[in-house]
Amino acid sequence: MLAEISRRMQSNGVETQPVPSGSVAILLCTLNGARFLPFQLASFEAQDFADWRLFVSDDGSKDDTLALLTEFQKKHGADKVKLRRGPAKGFVTNFLSLICDPALKSDFYSLSDQDDVWEADKLSRARSFLTNVPADVPGVYCSRARMIDEQGVEIGMTPLYKKPPHFRNSLVQNLAIGNTMVFNEKTRSILMRAGPDVDAAVHDWWIYLAITAVGGRIFFDPNPSVSYRIHGRNLIGSHGGRVRRALMMLKRFKIWNDLNIRALERIQGAMPEENKKTFELFRRSRELSLLPRLYGLLRSGVYRETMLDNVELMLAALVRKI
Image (cartoon, rainbow, N blue to C red; front, side):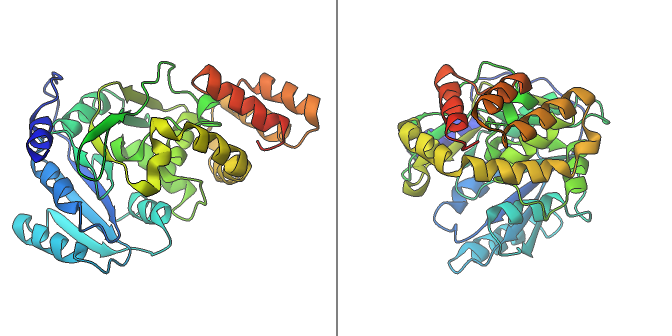
């Protein structure tokens, strides 16, 4: 199993072209992650692009996480690896505290969970896309992920999305997996405009939502850049969690949308007119009675990726859970 992970870290068979220099800040959030953290740290070291720095925000680990990070810092130096105490208000707030820290500077920013394994060309592939995005345009790279269990055995792949990322999709569905995300400074400036205290449903959905809202560029790489470790607590991310996802949607979808809408209001002024119109139609339709609600939803143009996804969306609208 370890040999297989090592092989994948060395190459995934995808050719990448040389790109101009540009440093990457790896933003890692930790909490009691000692069991799997060494695999992730090793995959940072195995990157074929070496101009990265690691910024770690720990939310109060009680296991050996901090000891492992301290050893990693000693190995690479305090300039390469920086450790800090997190806000201890959950992983979303922890990630946003790093993203929105004005003292943290880099050309590009890569989000990292504590228990995954990166492909060796994750950063170089992301930079190949991002260096072709103009500096004044928000750009985000994300990808599929190879799912592994707690022993590191592959158990499947995350979905291959065929429709292009778009604001009308991000309003009702998250296609971007946070542990695959790499973005440019302009993206960070949009997120900083909303602030680290924004109460979004999930940090990766918020990034996808915010950047499509302002007309930024999202690139979804069909090739996996991460081995995403699925625990018993997050089987919702696997294909086998379809029913659970549908039930969770009906239970929480309206709450998530309430949060996302309030968050979007902070950056509404940066939206192009077409997206402002879509946002207003979606926001107003949610509060209407049944037939006007369905009509308003159709007029807004919001959609999910597959036919079954859209059936779930209509069901949520019918029972006023949107």
